[in-house]
Each structure stands twice: as C-alpha cells, then as structure tokens.
Length: 143
Length: 117
Length: 96
Image (spheres, chains in turn purple, yellow, orange):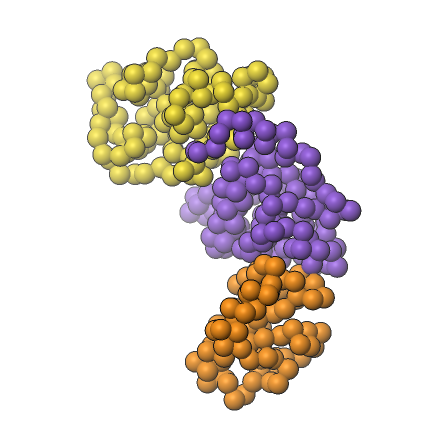
C-alpha cells in the first residue's frame, strides 16, 4: 500500500461527511452492478474495483441494478462445485467504508423483491433519479 | 491473491512448510503459531502480545470475509476488535513496518491482500 | 452531459433498457460494436426519445454490412466523430 497513515486516518473521519445531497447520493465513484452472483465474473470484478477504489480513499457508491440485486439476497452459499460466492464481499463492504448502497426500484419489483428481503439496509432509487445519480459521480464504472 | 506455486520450504518443528515466491503459505492449513514465529524470525521480527492480537484480528477477518484486508479495513477491524487506540495506522506501522496489511497477512497465514499494491 | 456507449445488440438482452433508464435529458447515446444493430429500422423505435442524441459508429456498421440499412434517426459518426463526442461529454459510461 502506498497510502500515508494520515490519509487513512483522515479517511476514516471523512467517509461519513458527504453522504447525500438533496436525497441523491454523491461520491467520487459510482460502480453499477448489473450481473448476478455465480453466473459470470462480472459481479466479482465490479466489487473488486469498488474495494480497490475504497482502499485508496475514494468515496464509493454502489448501485445494484438488473440481476445485480441478487448480490444482496440473504442465505447465499458457495456454488455446486464449491466456487466462492460474492456474499462475503458484500458483508465486508462496511469494513471498506462503502456505505452508500443503492438499489434500482425497478430491478426489485420486476423480480418480486422488496428492500426488506435483502441482506443489508439499502436506499431504493426510483427510475427518474438514476440520471442524477450518474451525474453526481465524476466517475461511473459499469459491470 | 494466494499463489499455489511452491517456491521454497521453511522448516518448522521438523515439518517443511511450502512458501510461494513472496513468502506466503501455499497451504493455509499449514499455519500454526510456531509457523508465524518462524516467518517472523525470517524477517528478524519478534512477535509480542501486541503482534499476536493483530494476527488474531487478521485471522478472524479472513474467517468471516474469505479475504485478507487491505490497510484501510485492517485499521478499522483492529479498531473494532481492540479499541480505537490501537485502530490507528501508526500503531500498525510500528508493529509491522513497511506494509502492515501485507506483512500481517503473511504472518497470519493468509493470502496476500488482493487490493494492496 | 454524459456520453453513453452501448456495445450490445438491442435485439438481444436488456442492456439497452438499463442504458436508457440511466440517461438524462441531455445525455447522448453512441451505438458501437453489436450496439449498431439499434440503428436498423426494426430497432430504432426504442430510441424515439433521443432525437439528435443518437449516434452509431460508421466503422462498426460497415463491418457488419449494415451501413446502407441504417435509419436516418441515427447520426452516423466515424472514429474521429467518436473522439469529438467523447471530448464534448463530461464523462463516458459504457454499457456492455
């Protein structure tokens, strides 16, 4: 790691300052996750990108859209051949100070799910707020 | 990430422990406190009670999340487990100079932290 | 203004819907690679809200033999045009 100690200790405090502005989440990086666990490596790669950015002190927001909402299902397990899932990483996000977890409302309803079904507390984003969400992050990575 | 390549062996209590090119355990199941002592001795580090409690935090982190932490989450995990006084990068830099996340993971028998350059 | 890049065919899969749902009123959409199928008459109706903001990459259309079949609603740009679009945008977001 090439972080200085002061940057890390400072980051601990700063991470909490800017959360939401006018109800729309804000941050340095928005990672959009649109793929389900197990089916491909997209989700894991997106989460890895988020962790790396967070480890370097970037304020990261995650948007779970499409099948990406399945990443938040409780009671996930390893795959049939013992492949590691992504639920361990989801559980770990708070340790990386990734606390802005957003879920696309349409992704939930079209799968018969609601925010209460998910393993972590999330903010549900209605469709018309999505463009603003992208606008408020200088960098958007799509997985 | 953990490398499965055996680069060399470290002899601990008459057992040969396989290490990868960066000195991380090839098989995590080989870990024991004696292995940690031997790995530390290689780097001329002596493990004190303060080191051991951080090693325990690291091993608990891996048991829960299946990943070795980078520096930032390590600082946070240590703070949560051992109190805010110890949850500081300065404290960890003093215990494990150079790169606490990497050095700590090696001694704790974990894979190299993935998002740690 | 964000430049959105779509490289998946709108005729298969829902990536195009994800992209459209995330687009703001000034954002632009550039169809590249298999995304250029969106410029065909049978597909272009999906993009009716994007008048003047829909683009398709000439090279990818030509490679697929689709250049002559392209609907007028899509503005055809070459690689230089792609660069200009990128420069005019605050950022780009890829949908794949």
